[in-house]
Image (cartoon, rainbow, N blue to C red; front, side):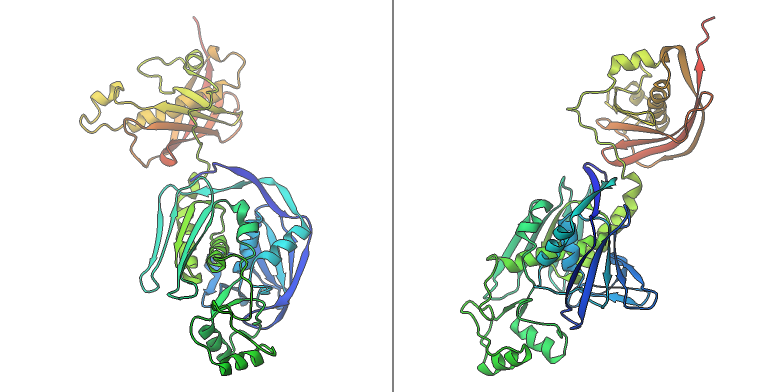
Length: 470
């Protein structure tokens, strides 16, 4: 779970206000997006309520997914957050305070486009803080048997999404949509509007559930024969003189923006709902028949996975194509160890506070002959020794004449062995200074990774001692 790609966090250059009606509540709402500090995240604030409570955009606060995604915390409720969240993700906005004077994000035209226009109007500001993407190293699945929903997150170098929808509808048929890179969101996905079926519309009107509904903020799909009486009733509800049905079953001559606009809108919803994970992720999401409740459940699963693996977010990435900072010849000049006890093959990162070394483990290591013959496992003490040697290079690098010093380890604390290291593994040895080196005493935190799994970790204290040549 690492940060293979780090950009900088982003917020807005200044505030921007969007006003409109809430689809479900019918409230006229003014919504202002305001810049926020690095690490703030995305938060909503109900400025019309006493104490002006704040609700974080997080799956932990989702209370309803029946007709959109609704958040609630400390008595403050904000519904239909998904199209706005999708726009923020699509534009790479990490930190923003969203002030509302009502209970619902305005529906606008039912897409993310108006929010993207507002973000562009405000301008995007790059902040002086790294953006860490969380990548996954195993597949994460979500199934819902009753709704026939399947979702999976696969390891990927980018954030990609594929959605498939099948409504058993002669009009929509089976559709799919794909987003290969989040950069394409603005052009390919943002303009796609929400949609509903004519029979759903009647139910929603009967139950007064779309007080802010208008034929300009949704695509209405008519997939069965509709009587003139039904159309007249709808025209009255929407204060229209006349409502007609297009031959292919889209109400009132709305032009589709893309032939597969409904599938693309479902993808837009996935982007918005998965923003509630609370962390930027790298994964390929494949969603078959997604809906808000499934999206939110899936977001919960991914968030749990990240929380469980978060302590290893700074996994070093080893690219054998990159030249080593120190090769074995340089290491031999720095460390006093020789075969069979030199356990660092090269150094790939080195700063004044950390070092990353590589040790290729092969079946020909001499210790495998006597350590569990027939079940070769690298001894934990030798993994700690490999860390110690990498740490020695970090410590000695602060001296002009490293060859005149030796490193002796004084203490090992909090040592944990979490995964076996086997022949064929490449150990990535990371050592970080916990405190500046004082009077030759060096305190370090060490981690052995294989891939992005933590195998061993320990706190080590060493002393640098000048060689005595007597």
